[in-house]
Image: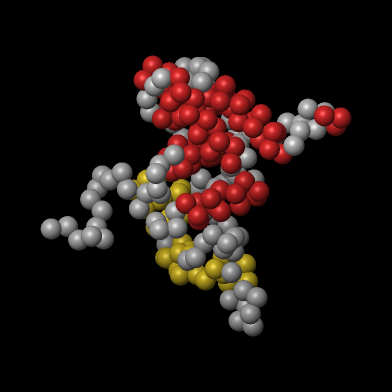
Length: 200
């Protein structure tokens, strides 16, 4: 009998998001994200719901810049977001020669996070994030970390992440790693050794 805390490999309960992403040429983004031909396998209502969910998830991570029409007709935040979601829905259903190459590094990370994590019913039991935060700007990194912390609160999330070492604010002046409100523990690799470093 397998203990309840065990995970048998390979397992859908262990997901890795690496720093190198694969994206096929001549594909419709929504089909690759869902790993099936949405346009031929779903009816119109199901397809629209499916595409809207992906666009909404992406936009919740500030995927596309929200456009204001002009200063005399500035849109409300809600209608600006809806316009961005509508634009994304169109883009996701349009076959592209190489859609992924048109995205910034941060946008690629967001697509992979949505595709591999946020479209699931729940976070995988173990999530390994390998340098996926590196291309994100500070605001996006904060958004992604907050979202992961909430969505994956019952999971083990291991992050390979390069950051500066700070100094704690107490009298010890002990070296620590900024937690950014996300990290609870830190294993620091130094001279081929793992060092348990506190977070601050």
